[in-house]
Amino acid sequence: AQDLQQGREIGDNYVTTEWLKEQFGKRCSDCGDCLRYDVNGYKVNSNLTADRLDCSESHHLKNIVPLCCHCNQATGCWK
Image 1: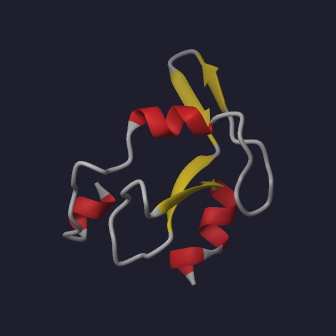
Image 2: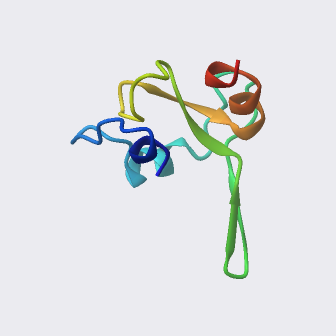
């Protein structure tokens, strides 16, 4: 939704569910916190985000790194 709202291209190399699933159990690229999810009934909570390296581009696979929510909000495009 974020990329579409900003008019950024959504191509074949866009972030996938598979990429997201592969990140769970790995470490945040910034602080090293374990990237995880919890299921509570019908609700899923996760600290995983896909941070863009170049904020002018979309969330394509060559432009993202896994970050926890805290680090994503504290760095990158939020500066």
